[in-house]
Image (cartoon, rainbow, N blue to C red):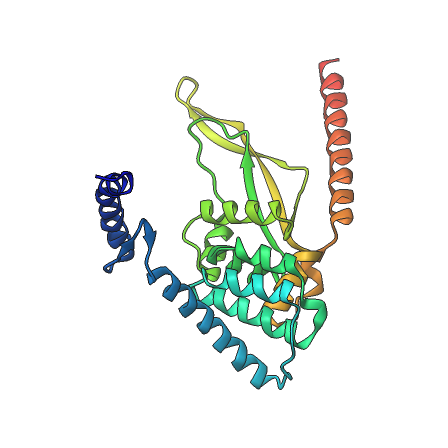
Length: 273
């Protein structure tokens, strides 16, 4: 037996096991040849690309945009990445970006392609909502053990944009901030008090249970431009903040918080005297 035959005999059961797992993941038969996936993935990717091109063609015809040659450095990465996009809402963004690039060469930005590549459906829902107006929500820290707090308006927001939980919302917002699409501006925070029964004295004790921070979520300049190019819709100016303005607001709030803390200490010392 040759070395190649021996290796093939060892790899065959591994390939069969891999094909079996992939069939369960894909929900349809899959073939492996020589340890390499057969054409199912290739076909799936081109099905996605054709769907996006079809959507882009519809936009081009509707808006009467004349087709033109695009820079390969922009077009080829876009077509390649589009093969892995099968959600309809995400496909619409890719089609919108392609149509915008055909209409205006300034939209041929490879950074747009790389950013769209990492966005998920929940990210897109939040970005679309932010294009209309800023989102202001409460977050709680230093929460007393055994106390559960939530912002009632967050439930309304989740229902409006179609998200399942507050964890989905904040995880998505954090990711969008990390890739430079949104800015988060918290205020200095205010104490939250709760009343607890005191059976020893048959009374109610009021104590601090948490600090509530109002967080304003806005589109960063880059995020606004990306969502405008990919949705082909205007973005509300009140939804956009510059990064330097955002940092200035944070600095001012930090100063205000320090002043408030010093004032509280002064009053405490006066009370003691």
